[in-house]
Amino acid sequence: MVSLRFGAELRMAIDKIVPGVAEAVAGIESGMTIMISGFGFAGVPNDLIHGVLDLGVSDLTVISNNAGTGTEGLAALMGSGRVRRIICSYPRSKGSDNFDARYAAGEIELELVPQGTLSERMRAAAAGVGGFYSPTSVGTDLAAGKEVRTIDGRDYVLEMPLRADVALVQAQKADRWGNLVYSKAARNFGPVMAMAADLTIVQAKEIVPLGGLDPEVIVTPSVFVDRVVHIDNDREWDI
Amino acid sequence: MTADAFTRLSRRQLAWCAAQAIPDGSYVNLGIGVPTLCANVMPADREIVLHSENGVLGFGPAPAAGEEDRDLINASKEFITMKPGGAYFVHTDAFVMIRGGHLDLALLGAFEVSGDGDLANWTTGDRRFPPGVGGAMDLAVGAKAVWVLTEHTTKKGEPKIVDTCKYPLTAPKVVRKIFTDLAEIDVTPSGLVVRAMVEGLTLPALQELTEPKLTLADDCRVLSAPAA
Image 1 (tube, each protein chain N blue to C red):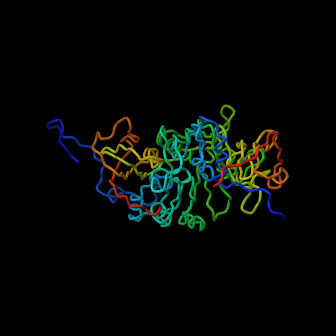
Image 2 (image 1 turned 90 degrees about the vertical axis):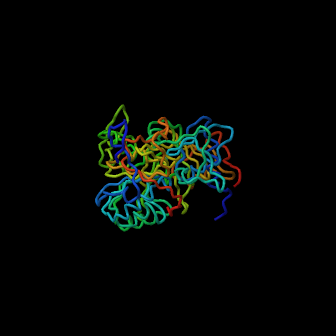
Image 3 (image 1 turned 30 degrees about the vertical axis):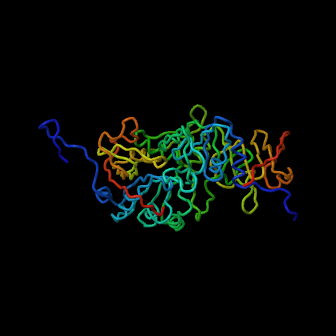
């Protein structure tokens, strides 16, 4: 978008707001790795997930804390057969039937990652860090095959960065640069996923003018965000 | 077989007993299962700051019917309320608090606990029931102390406090205290010490439901909680 500023000087304004879900998810391809924000039913970008389903892409790797419950959102994606692999900490919950069935049938690969390791691996990828040593999972099956190192007398396992091609994130408010604030516990993985993907797509409940978010309270600074779509519906999803 | 001479605590009563044992001023994570019930039965005369792995510090009890906020839930995905002084933060910070040793106490559920404090609570290995580790492994190694809150036996009546965990471990040698629906038990270097038991329960009867050898504390109390 072109606008005039500073008298006659022509400048490209930054406007990451796209008109609809289709434009928001455009370019997502089969075989991609997609991070999806949310913890339980809080903070899940359901409209974007259904946008991805509508694209018809398959062979996806999904990174999300849970594997969805009910019939819509993440559960719809799990049930669609389009997901080859999920990386998550807690796939099974009351109502996670879609995932449970695919898993029991051997139709989906599961990489189970402790929740703090999952979020820190994302942060490492976001921060350009080549891995880190964590005390979590030492002496358990989830540390199998991982390098163990003793630092100051304590054992740690080497964990590698976790990045994605795309992050789908739900936020409360956004401006046209993509600055974000979240709502309560719906924040969860949103800010770290937004940092850890090549293409970060946000559905925001409210769009505010540039300058409408106090710089002291912005949670995700705009540099991490690529596209924003305004989704203000309050419909209750079956998740 | 004679009827039991004792009554097991309800899940809420079990949570109540554990909550009353939390020191004033503590920062405490409540894990999935019975532990999240503690938020509803915290002692009113203490300031205890509750942490939830999904980016919440300083939460309170469940909201009244009709007051639920879909953006405000705990680790068990149940609705909660916020207390003055509470804060929200990104998942990475929630686990900085956990893994970095900033929490005084983590209350966790269990499939099994061993006599030397090994904890198993993330998988049974049965493909019909996908594993779920959540934040358990981070909490088990990161909190300054770990207490387990669980029923004393499985639904089939088998001991959950065992000599050696059959299920894969969440972390070795981390549990300090176990609250069950029958007893409060400390995990000590010299073995399991019974600090309290429900009314009418004897040490031999409790021992029958427990694999590792139990010792009675000199000042063993009656474990009781308000009804309901």
